Image (tube, rainbow, N blue to C red; front, side):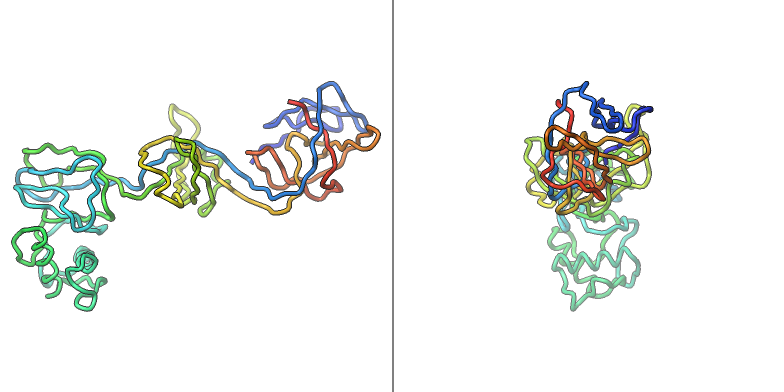
Length: 352
């Protein structure tokens, strides 16, 4: 929102100097013509309060694939490859390591009669992959049952490995989502060490990240609608998904910032850019059928409040007090309320 400040002393009215400075000053009942001025028309229209910020377009999430298999690394994914649930992520000693979905990392072999969160996510994956049905195996169960064993055997058959019904430690990697490989830190032919990070990745979900000045945090809220201007100047809509609460030091010692994440409404429209600079215009408020004037028409009164200079008949000008509502920084307009001002009246503004 625009900052409006009272400046100067000795005059009943002084011009607002930030951020739309005019340099005009007025004695009560007189008009100072020292600076060139023009006229603008008071209007009624819908008004939105907007903030435009720089941002980065990329993908949501950051993941590190941790290996638990032992042997020699014989296959690794290419950078840019997308690996989904049930697909092979890499190979050790020629044996496939499959990607499964879950937030609990692999830390043990899974076999019949075992219980735990890791078993629960395996059950959900087996149902999602179609290796068993939800009638045969509840996807919310955290018990390794006969039907879990059946599902694991079908998964192993699809992978071309021994069908023993036990998910050995290192045979699978659990990650929360499909992975888009961004870098590979391992080298083919070297030893695979348990606990070693082999691959870095993101999700496949498009997202825009904003490093917003911390003092603007109150101006943005989850659910705010935005427009994203892409590198090719195409515009696509989005919605604020999260607003950070912890400020971090800005780049090169700059002002503290918080992270604001935006989800594009039409992800396909954002193309394939990764870590690309974009501009985001955030709509922080709106009002319909508002009485609006240019921000630089506002004059601050020495006794408080604001006024505009109305150009009347026969060249007679007079001051009309106004109260301020919503600001539209993008178009330089402000809503005025509690005033006798009317749409269609001509008001004085500085000439550019």
